[in-house]
Structure formats: C-alpha cells, structure tokens
Amino acid sequence: MDVKLNTRTMSGKSTGYWQSLGCHELGHTGGLGHRSHSSDSNDNSCMREEIWPRYFDTHDIDAVNHYV
Image 1 (cartoon, one colour):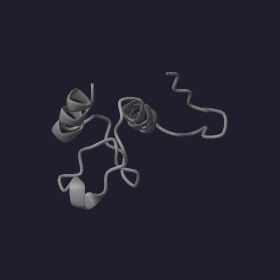
Image 2: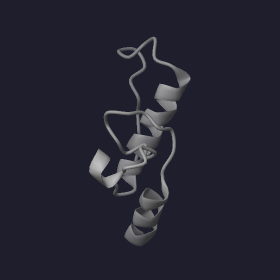
Image 3: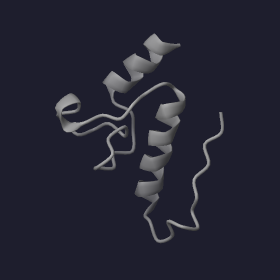
C-alpha cells in the first residue's frame, strides 16, 4: 500500500500535525478504523479525527496484531 500526503494543499501545518496524520493514515493500511472519544477516553490514539496525537495506543497495536 502507498500512503501519500498532499503537502501542497495543507501548507503551514506543524511537524506534529504531519506526524499524526502519517500515523493515522498508516493505521488505515493496518486495518484500523477511526476512533471516537468514547473508545479512546485517554485521548492518545492517532486514529482519532478531531485531535492529533502522534502515536498508536495499546488498543491500536493490539488490533493490528490481531488483524495480521
């Protein structure tokens, strides 16, 4: 799978934003879906859409390990 990020239309974003977006899109290639606050109550999953953590949490990692 290829993950391509269009940096031209999203110029001016921080490094942290791009790290979170890369983590999020890479998560989709591993079979992860979007997470909501109710399934990520400590707000630390990059699979959230409305906040920008930069890493997978243990729930995400367990789901990928189960998926493969």
